[in-house]
Image 1 (spheres, rainbow, N blue to C red):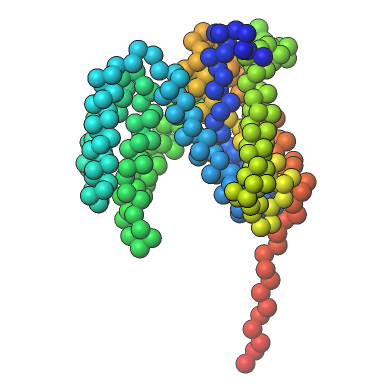
Image 2 (image 1 turned 90 degrees about the horizontal axis):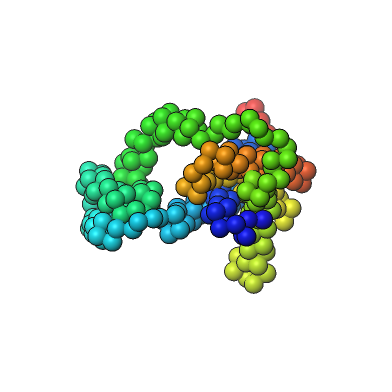
Length: 283
């Protein structure tokens, strides 16, 4: 719908990511109707989608690249890698080098989100026996800031849509229509299609207790692209009208994807009853 317009075509990556919180939230509403394997599959796809979106941002939405700053960022990455291989467990050196790398990547012109992902990948995850694993400590420390400050501010700043001058016909414009259909059709076709090929060629197999119809429902839920889609849209377009069209397309595509995915899974699976316990006979 937009390939003939080079300006509109900048939004090609908007439907790429899956909003983990919203997609898993919808699946959680199904309770025991959704097998655990289905939830794990959705979580894995959503995480990979978001990482892929960050790589796309770094490669395709970067302008005025500074090679010197980028090379300093690579030096920071080498430092983090060295700390990891040496088995350093203290968060302080990872934090200091991570901040240095973040500044370098920001100054290089590449989106600094990539530095955050790389830093997280280098922090040791620990062992099951370890009570205070470094990555768990970092996650625990950052969680209240992310949950109660970062995400609310992001949602407040990006979620608002001005409907002034818009009508249902606006959804038929190339940008919102391309985004909405990318989420509603493109995502489930890609996810379900690749899953089918993986099973067909023996690369993977369908989890026990999961049907193709349930998997199709989860594939539809990957079309809920709220947070990261809005973020990419903000990088792809600058004018207020274009950004409103982006938000309209993202919200419409996400809502329809969520409703269809929920309906597909709910119509397929019956709730799983908890096993009944037999009282022990009186002695």
